[in-house]
Amino acid sequence: MLNVNNVQIVYDNVIEAVRDASLSVDEGQIVTLLGSNGAGKSTILKGISGVLYPEDGDIIGGTITLNGESLIGRKPDEIVRSGVVMVPEGRQLFEPLTVEENLMMGGITRSRSGATEALENVFDIFPRVKEKRSTIAGYLSGGEQQMVAIGRALMSSPRLLMLDEPSLGLAPQIIAEIFAAVSDLSKQNNVSVLLVEQNAELALSIASYAYIIENGRVVMDGPPDKLMDNEDVKEFYLGFSESGHRRNMRDVKHYKRRKRWLS
Amino acid sequence: MDYFILLTVSGIAIGVIYGLIGMGYALIFKATSVVNFAHGEIMMLISYMAFSIASSWTLPFWGLLLVCVFISAIVGLVIERVFIRPMLGQDVFSTVMVTIGLAVMIRAVVVLIWGADPLLLPTDIGDSGVEFGLVFLYTSQLYAIGLLAFCVLGMWVFLRFSRMGVAMRATAARETTALLMGINVTHVYAIAWAIAAVIAGISGVLLGTIYGLGPDLWTQGLRAFPAVILGGLDSVFGAAISGILIGVLENLSEGYIGQGLKEISGFLVILVVLMIRPYGLFGTPEIERV
Ligand SMILES: Nc1ncnc2c1ncn2[C@@H]1O[C@H](COP(=O)(O)OP(=O)(O)OP(=O)(O)O)[C@@H](O)[C@H]1O
Ligand SMILES: [Mg+2]
Image (cartoon, rainbow over all chains, first blue to last red; front, side, top):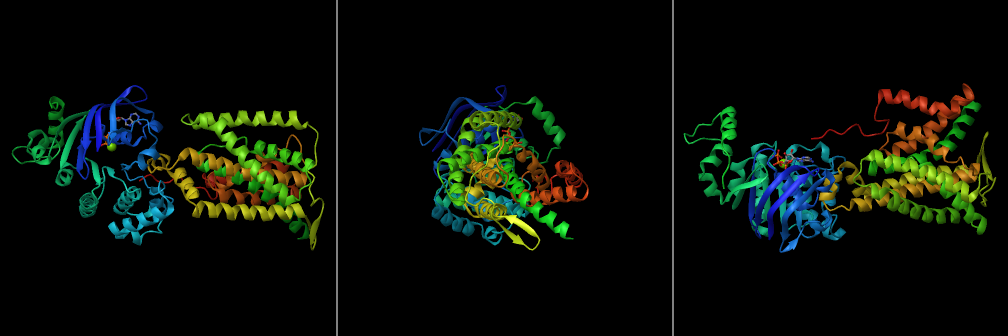
């Protein structure tokens, strides 16, 4: 369904944020994109959503297609209409607006009646959001905000939902709730999910395929069990070494400097 | 006491116009983060257009106002399309410079077309008025009060209940996320300019009716500016209320302290207020980024 091929993205014409990224997501599949800070994960998602230009970013090579049609150069609202929507990193709610207004803005590309219908669906998925519907979004807890952010994206009835670090700063039990909802959504409604995470263990637990990106390059990919068996993945992303002991950060960093990923 | 009431009421009468003008500034700033330095000039341009219309056809006041509302909306859309949209992606400062250039242009165009002599905007309400005890208000001043109330209510309904209005608030809050959700931000900007121009048009027709026209009418835009700052640049309703406050204050300071203070009292007040509340009386304190 979504195909990203050898994509290269620069900011300000010089900063190479993504050097060579290829990945694909099939209908109804949950795919995760793992990588450390600054690897280029968010940049890839922004490239798919068509929102690089406000940050002076540009796709200078490669292709991005949805069911064979190119997404590059299309306006963000057209991309949403074609069924691809993103939940940005850090939730990015419209803080001064109420929860319901936030959600309705997620449905802006649809008719008013379509949006009202979608609102009920979101309330079914996240009952807690319904309770808070008239609260100012900026006053919600982090977990509630993440639910609103996901709900807002779902308002457009996407075929592909892209989540940028949804677990960031949330308590384990809220994370579990959110991940369960995402997983249900993909199973029941056949929505594809592209999940960007730092929490590799969590992401690998619900994904059916994973990519690892480093310094703007996809350096490894495969099904979760294959990656989880890989020593390097264990080391960097799952946080334990062969002996089963967690290494301290300094060791890992030192090791990382020496070792480069090979695909 | 009578003197006080007199000063206050006539202060309100001019203050509502400051409020209207201020709402236009605040709306554009809120939606697009640009201070439109041509706002007073747009107001002047439309009041002169109103003069031409009123001299060619005999229209009742409300008819004239309605025609001017349509024309203003078009003027707003054209200005946005021709001067502002090409600046998208440039920094805000450049856009502000464009509005300054636009202001100078409009001033020149007005003198070119209509000349520099003062003119009277002929309307059917003329010099009529109503006596309230010791204060006399012109019909046009009463209309001004009513129109400010109407615009405030209209803006409130628009921003609260219409999809475009909510989208405008969303865009003001987070532009990139607005894009991500599929909000047509370009469209939102254009509508903001159109509405601001309509409000400018209404204030222009009122000013023309009450005080007549002159090539320096744009200075009323500057006079209203303290109201916008006082209200908090991004608060449309704050601008409306602060307009009235400034109008009253100008009148009181002139009446009790002395001539000349009228022009600067507004600016003095904002200096003091901004020291205590840098984001104005009703503005948003820099919202914490989560
Ligand atoms: N607007 C921008 N202008 C210039 N450089 C940028 C911009 N945004 C990101 N970058 C750079 O591009 C690279 C990739 O950033 P990106 O945000 O995609 O990383 P990420 O994988 O999402 O990291 P994180 O896990 O910290 O969110 C980084 O080196 C970053 O400094
Ligand atoms: Mg990121």
